[in-house]
Length: 418
Ligand SMILES: Cc1ncc(COP(=O)(O)O)c(C=O)c1O
Image (cartoon, rainbow, N blue to C red; front, side):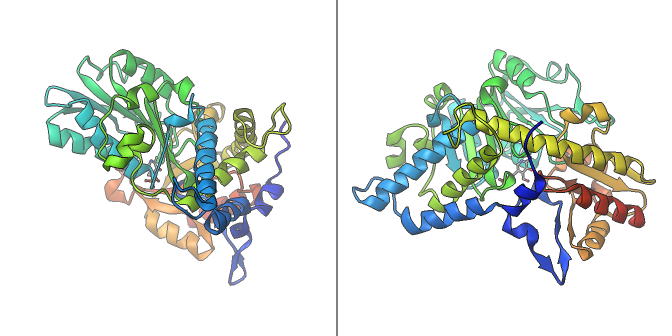
């Protein structure tokens, strides 16, 4: 049993206590971006006051800025369990980083019309469209990893049906921002790499909820965005060092001289968001334990912290899904079985018979309950479930700072609307 207390966690997030015309805010828009604790804000402010210089200078602010970049890279490596901080790259966000790396891979792997790219019908467009551009530029064939729209999971042999010796890239989401399914990315990466393909994992929706371990997954690339895990708008990418060393990078010449990871980072990194990213990792670690008590951030503390947050989320997910499945007319577009909750994240998409998702989101907004509706950039899954012309889904996305009372409120309100 962890010592996690939702009240103690909530007290650290200034935005959670804001009221509008006397009404509390219920943040259930978390899959699109989470709120930030005070330590993240403090880290960003501190960087702008005392670490605000470019790198490589002899003066104190430049040296402190370098220390900050190094410290954040080390913490991010621990967050992903990357073997080395030199395998961590920073960029604007997941989409920008994926578009850039897809260009580099297209050129480096010499992708041509004889090659194949495997994409997933369950993914956010940020891990689909960059590879569609590669296919359209090169004439490579796209093959789709299809999921079962009744179980919301891939069949065990889904990859076997599409993987060949000509597959150059396999791009796959760790957890879906639509169905919430957690995919068995390690099994898929193992098979794909054995076939000689480069594996590219989108961890944007898994990183806020479960510990990420790139070594256990065995991928070549993995990317997420810190604003989904209580941090700032900052993309964080892992790339396997041995592969990075062989890749071409579309970048300016001075950056290329440094080699990886700097060769894959363009322009001057925002100090304030790097500092705030460090703050977010420190926040997650602050919920965990390490036998070595003096250490503020360690892999052990991050995993233990994440497990503590997950335990509370699991209680809320059971309550939410249990409630949703008992409301007449509501259909959960994702895994609902109580003993399969570990195979999903608490991103829960629903449809309500006879109701437009956008109208429902608007009705909730009037009560200061924040929900997203539509396709949420998950074009493939929404199309696969034939929901595009029905307005997509209404998405209820939990984070560890949500409460049992908030879930109760949203369920009551939905029952009224349905
Ligand atoms: C699963 C998934 N992948 C990628 C993205 C894109 O992330 P970013 O905004 O950092 O580009 C999102 C954003 O919602 C997402 O949910």
